[in-house]
Image 1 (cartoon, helix red, strand yellow):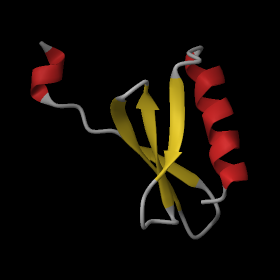
Image 2 (image 1 turned 135 degrees about the horizontal axis):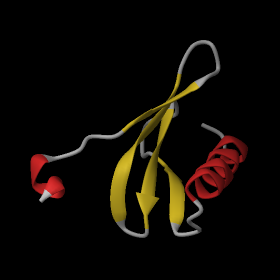
Image 3 (image 1 turned 60 degrees about the vertical axis):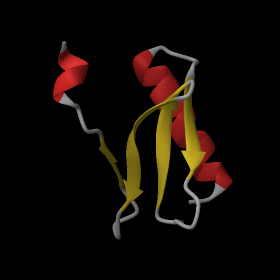
Image 4 (image 1 turned 180 degrees about the vertical axis):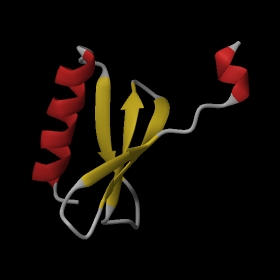
Length: 66
Protein backbone atom coordinates (compact mmCIF):
# COMPACT_ATOMS: atom_id res chain seq x y z
CA UNK A 1 0.00 0.00 0.00
CA UNK A 2 1.11 3.52 -0.60
CA UNK A 3 1.96 5.93 2.20
CA UNK A 4 -1.09 7.98 1.12
CA UNK A 5 -3.39 4.97 1.58
CA UNK A 6 -1.83 4.19 4.96
CA UNK A 7 -2.37 7.80 6.07
CA UNK A 8 -6.02 7.72 4.99
CA UNK A 9 -6.60 4.40 6.76
CA UNK A 10 -4.96 5.69 9.94
CA UNK A 11 -7.14 8.82 9.91
CA UNK A 12 -10.21 6.62 9.36
CA UNK A 13 -9.46 4.26 12.26
CA UNK A 14 -8.59 7.14 14.61
CA UNK A 15 -11.83 8.90 13.72
CA UNK A 16 -13.92 5.71 13.90
CA UNK A 17 -12.66 4.67 17.32
CA UNK A 18 -11.90 8.16 18.68
CA UNK A 19 -8.35 7.15 19.55
CA UNK A 20 -5.26 9.02 18.39
CA UNK A 21 -3.00 6.21 19.67
CA UNK A 22 -3.94 4.00 16.71
CA UNK A 23 -1.26 3.61 14.05
CA UNK A 24 -1.41 1.99 10.64
CA UNK A 25 2.00 0.65 9.64
CA UNK A 26 3.35 -0.81 6.43
CA UNK A 27 4.20 -4.51 6.46
CA UNK A 28 7.70 -5.59 5.54
CA UNK A 29 7.82 -7.41 2.20
CA UNK A 30 4.04 -7.01 1.65
CA UNK A 31 2.43 -4.35 -0.51
CA UNK A 32 -1.18 -5.56 -0.46
CA UNK A 33 -1.74 -5.05 3.26
CA UNK A 34 -0.76 -3.09 6.35
CA UNK A 35 -1.12 -3.52 10.12
CA UNK A 36 -3.10 -1.69 12.78
CA UNK A 37 -1.52 -1.04 16.19
CA UNK A 38 -2.50 0.70 19.40
CA UNK A 39 0.88 2.01 20.49
CA UNK A 40 2.99 -1.21 20.35
CA UNK A 41 0.08 -3.65 20.59
CA UNK A 42 -0.75 -5.40 17.32
CA UNK A 43 -4.50 -5.33 16.60
CA UNK A 44 -4.92 -6.72 13.10
CA UNK A 45 -4.21 -6.65 9.39
CA UNK A 46 -5.86 -4.47 6.76
CA UNK A 47 -5.97 -6.06 3.30
CA UNK A 48 -6.65 -4.37 -0.02
CA UNK A 49 -8.73 -6.53 -2.35
CA UNK A 50 -8.98 -6.62 -6.13
CA UNK A 51 -11.93 -4.18 -6.08
CA UNK A 52 -9.74 -1.58 -4.32
CA UNK A 53 -11.73 -2.06 -1.10
CA UNK A 54 -10.20 -2.74 2.30
CA UNK A 55 -10.84 -5.59 4.73
CA UNK A 56 -9.80 -5.51 8.38
CA UNK A 57 -9.00 -8.83 10.04
CA UNK A 58 -8.58 -9.05 13.82
CA UNK A 59 -7.99 -12.22 15.80
CA UNK A 60 -9.35 -12.29 19.36
CA UNK A 61 -7.56 -14.75 21.59
CA UNK A 62 -9.40 -16.54 24.37
CA UNK A 63 -6.89 -15.19 26.94
CA UNK A 64 -7.73 -11.63 25.86
CA UNK A 65 -11.32 -12.10 26.99
CA UNK A 66 -10.40 -12.78 30.62
